[in-house]
Image (cartoon, rainbow, N blue to C red; front, side, top):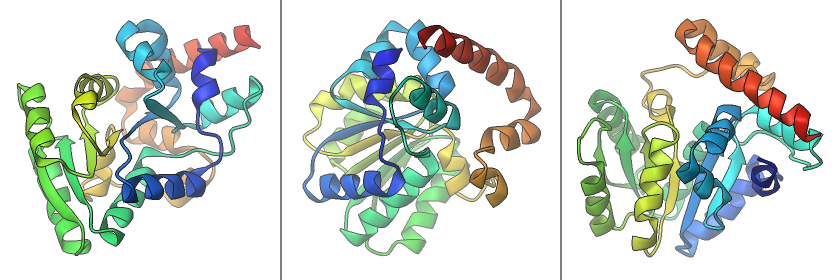
Length: 236
């Protein structure tokens, strides 16, 4: 796991977005993995996902205060969280600014279609190249469609690690594009689910808000985070 932390982006949200802007403008292909403690634990248990996390083709950003704190404990000075929702919001602004296109893949049909409509309404210079819900059976066929459309941004909301494994299978077939696995971000960005109140975000307690709103998450959260903390302690 130490190899993951060596790769985690260290400089914070604003520098990361500036780097993405340069890559968007220059059509530099980029694969972003947003990581919380559960993400990294999956990497230690899933060989295919571990390979993605270690790959030189991927960038890992610390989407979780646990990752930030663990990195600093292990001697990797990570400045702050870089959340998936904020990355996507930033990418939408960049796509609008530079007249770029986006493909949305994942979530339920009402969620992804509503997000597509919202983008077309609020970002006049951004082009929605297409969208598809995450319940289609042949997801690889969807990626063939995406490749033919050649969008500048490809956002995949299928959950970790399914979204990253799918991107990785097709990544080398693309000549350009910013690829991000965005988990449940479409639900928030479509307006159908509220993000945590500002005070929870400010104090890095979004995880607590999600558990309060969805108690069923607690078992999975507890299991992955207890394992994560134990592993970090052994690595010190």
